[in-house]
Length: 215
Ligand SMILES: N[C@@H](CCC(=O)N[C@@H](CS)C(=O)NCC(=O)O)C(=O)O
Image 1 (cartoon, rainbow, N blue to C red):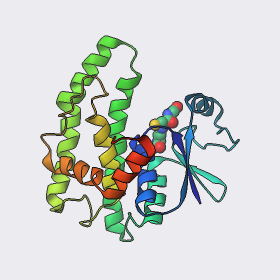
Image 2 (cartoon, helix red, strand yellow):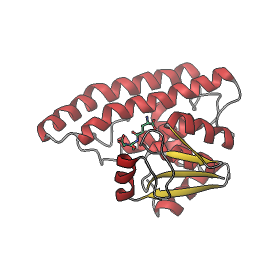
Image 3 (tube, helix red, strand yellow):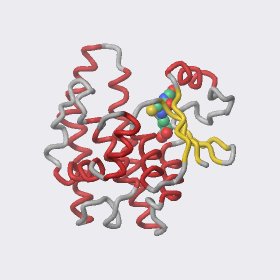
Image 4 (cartoon, helix red, strand yellow):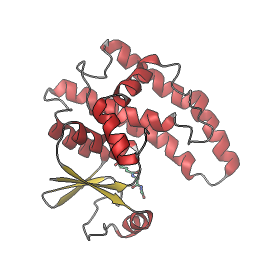
């Protein structure tokens, strides 16, 4: 059985793994790491159960006693197990580019979360809000227009849509100071993907069961 190790948060990197397995009713163990355990893991590279984490980062999955890291790689593994990836190489690459875009977007937002200088944080968030996020959202919106579908790939929901659902959900949640809840409002196709995944009955069931509320 696949084991997923991550903090008790619905961040997209882990949530794409959990939710695709949950939707497809593929059994998995959802192991939540405490903050102290996470900090220890970063320092030592070991999980509380003594397993070695390859890049001192989470999420990781464990399969047949092997720990594997890197969100893209493990999202694909779980996507294949869930039948929410693709057997077609071109479709698979199109899914991959969305997962990699989610990583790129995360990588422009995360430094502003770690920023200690309040003035710089405010300035960086303004650039995110006015320039960088709209730019990335436009790229994604254009891909959706070209695909002529409500989904990123193959006219069906895949891990690409699930990853973007949670990434967008995070960005428009209002918890990132300076990033308004309206941040995707000018991108209707992207907004629709969030809406559709969000309202998937199994996703609703997952959120209520796991977090006691919609996220
Ligand atoms: N390249 C990794 C990055 C994962 C990552 O940055 N994870 C964060 C938590 S969301 C982490 O473990 N940070 C600790 C660190 O990098 O020291 C991936 O794609 O999975």
